[in-house]
Length: 318
Image (cartoon, rainbow, N blue to C red):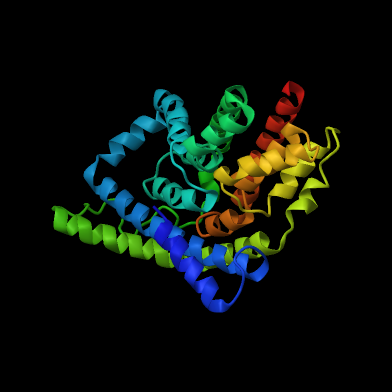
């Protein structure tokens, strides 16, 4: 699906005279590839979400989700939907923004945002091929459980209080009727998509510059050498150290294998990589367009605590 973006990134790096495997060339390749991918995802997802908003009775759907039974169903549904979407953390942000724009319960939106980058079918298949189905199933259950628990926690804390004041608005008042007819809806969806893309553009570029720098210049062995011990304290330290990084779930399996081969305990390596996948600094920079600093910190703490618990459980199990 993204071969065209890979090809363009390869051409840009080749034209620059740099090597795409390391250093500045790897950073440039990462930036161009992910910029193209995320811009397309933001534009398409925002467009589709705007169409859905106009085509379904979202007020009634939201009312059902806000009821006790709806919430109980909504959290696992959002987490499982996240597990079925093969997105990285930055690519999951546009769908989360769509949930926020549609005024879905904030805990349900966070259940998706937490689970989506952590679990997908490709990562699970790679995990099974490398470590066996038992561990792959445990990884899947841990990721979905973390999403549900994190969403529930943030929902109970009424995290919507710490969204940016204009996070819910798409340019039309709540009592203004939605456009009628497909032509009007398509035009409205295109305008909404463009508006969201313009609003997050500075944050997006900043996030990708940061991610590119980390991707190109932080040596892999640096982290492997830190977490070879089996002390309980290494797990939260590993989770915290993963925060600045930006990797996809599919890339974590070979990294996980390399870490374990270097003597890093499985749970400690998982805590490090789940943190890097689930709550990276580039993702937080993008989320800053709709969240206050307080909510960003709270979201990070919830995910870091969750990944630490997962690490301790896997160290005790394996």
